[in-house]
Length: 417
Image (cartoon, rainbow, N blue to C red; front, side, top):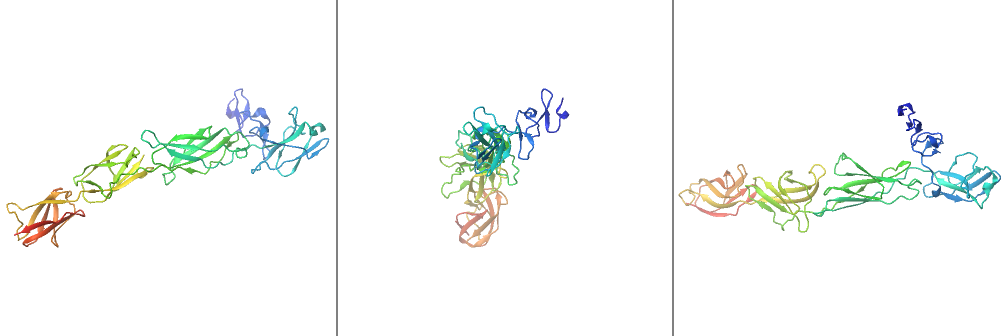
């Protein structure tokens, strides 16, 4: 026999019998596939469900006792008022005595009368009434506690998640058999990051984490009736103490020809690897990345106050978290000489002359020259070392200066004859 030969709420057993699935309709205990009892549910239907736990019940004396009837008053069991199994039990044999063979469902706050098989069950010395909360899924749990740690060089980052065992009422009046922990990184603004589910039987779990990544975590309890709805999410807060070391107000400097730029970590801290680095919001070429330093290959250029941003674990547009940020500059230009040929001075008639020096930038770097207060037309003619300017007519001493990509040279005294 196959499952397809049974009704939709049944499954085929090894012996070929059609047995009801958990939570589905049944006639008696023998029809439940998992061996669960066949119990009356709040709807009045008989379904395969959890066995009610007599040890979780309250006992009551009789408010009325006759030859064939007994009454009890069920008071509030907890702040959560469920339905109850209620029955009259023999304190010696453990048997119970109501007219039918299944305990009725009752609620709190009223007298409940039971038909008895014989008046001996009203013997208050040996017998008692018992009310047991009806099993249900666990109630919603409080948010879990989170500790994100392990950022030392020799210790990978982890996320420690813990919670408290639900009390009897919040466990659905059944033994909690496990917990489902659900977590994901919170970096995706469109909520597209996938959840990861972990099933555990303890009240804590440690999961691998990513450097500088924030997580949201919820937990739900599981009993024989099913899962509670997930708790409200807790959010982890990783340690973001790792920052680029800045030596006072001085920026990081590099010649306009480009080259290697080393970014050290703060003293006593370290970078979290792996990293992605951007320079002026564009991906940078990382030559070396270690816990104590990051070495970048900076291309030729010009100007001051360029930005560096270091993102840990992934990239700047996804789940990467900004770990460090700073500024850097190309070295300012300096003038060493004016190329005048065989004549040691600039001609009083003016003309085109090449100014030699360092850090003039690549071709097409914006350049402005000035002689005293007179601006000169200039351009980079030899990358990084030569700028040609048109000098005005005049003679005597002058102060010469250059603005290269917004950075200024010191003023130099020159002579024209």
